[in-house]
Image (tube, rainbow, N blue to C red; front, side, top):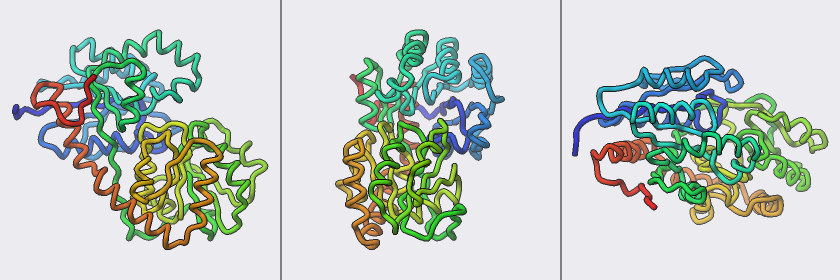
Length: 380
């Protein structure tokens, strides 16, 4: 085995604290890689005021480009990251200038490239704004993703979706990790949270996340002793119309971060994410880490909730969602607490960043023929 270190240049369009899963998972992965003796991670990202301040990863060299940076600006930043040691590009996402620049740079500098689509090539994502996606797919995106040396899927479900697209490269199946939550910290709840049992939704307010269905089901159920709390950016501006004729026990906090976010997850009796598509769903793992049982759908890779006794994972749609919610709210606080404790034990064992960093480092080194093929690699 070679003892040389490799450099991994991570390209992600935004690390704004409200930019969703990548703003937590890319920093988490890079922190884990920085603690290894085998990989030197670097980050190139853009700015987007709509997503708030970028997350800063201590101990990792990070280039943050101005808002609106295009392909040329990202390409120039990548070119400044060339290393004497073996180096590769790790591209996160799809469709954006950062991703186009990553593919261009890999071809130009003849370096390996691994692509983590972050759910942007799922069937639901490909159907959403379909005509724009198809134009981009045939203009450049298809070539860019087919030219990747390795694809990275965060679940078996996502790997199967990539194969369905006709992608034949090796796929590294490495899940996202989740940061531990200190349950001893004082609660710091956002203002306006009522003194009732809480069902919390925390993600983008977006049709993909099943928000309209959740609100309709909640209005039908009429649970005066409970409150539904929605947290996350309303990217499409859809929430005011959805709440116009809703019950009075629905509350919206906007985007949350840090201890406020963790406090709301800890305070919740239930967490719900009725998504139509998730490549991983890191917020599910975060809720479990907060000892909160989860309700989600089979369009996420969280069927294990049922076998672990940590929540419910069922069909997509209002009927299944209402059935799962009805069962969940009928349980005693002690029963839900026990489910939450089982969930926390499970995610702490399975999704530690330390082990995930080791797996990804092995993938990189395999790409350079420095190590044998890791067990997480799926070849066609």
